[in-house]
Image (cartoon, rainbow, N blue to C red):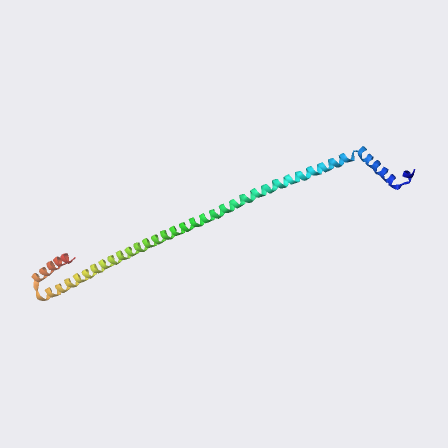
Length: 163
């Protein structure tokens, strides 16, 4: 009986009984199932994390492509705006030059008309002065009815020739 008094013996029996109870109530199976379900949950989370990482990479690449595309598009729009501005500037310069030329031509035509009108007025004034002078000269040199007829006929002829 020396084994029955040994506390180590009773600890060993208690341990074996405890292990027997654990096996009887299928605790190792439950622990295995719990560990398997936990491993499955972790595996599922890892798969989800990989999927999200791949999705994030694809999204990042898509945004990089779009960013490059936007940069290129912005550059193209800027170049187009420069070309349009240069074309508009050239067109405006041409229109301004045409307007200046047209106004210059109109001014020259007005000056020519004014000059022609001034020349006509000077001629008319000169004709009237010449007629008046001729009338005075003829009146002083010619006398009588013949002089009167001669003066009137000369004035009519002179007036027709000078105008």
